[in-house]
Length: 142
Image 1 (cartoon, helix red, strand yellow):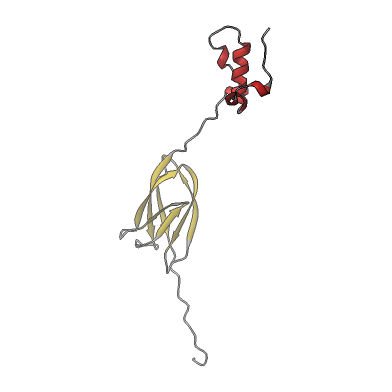
Image 2: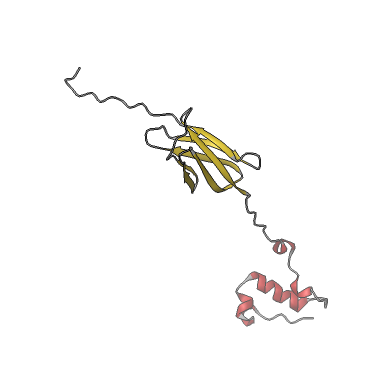
């Protein structure tokens, strides 16, 4: 029979975590096999897998229905870019899956849409609508 010390008598490093207590007890109660000291309950032995999403560089082209639009701010979350003279920009490291993309430029309506980024979908075209200025009317003028 194994003498199991009272909790108060355990070393600090064993008391501070349930995993350390489990390993300490497993060592005390081990069956003599080499790995008996490292056995843990099934639920504690399973490590959570960290899944890193697949990311891609995507190409965005912005036009006004016919001509490219330069200087448009395009964003997906914190990833952003600005279109050049040809109306294009690249957003780097965009996660696969559904993403909300926005495009803004003074003089145009704000654009927002959901796109799906995947191995086969990395190029997108946005068509902005120009805002028609409302003429100012001064009282007394006709």
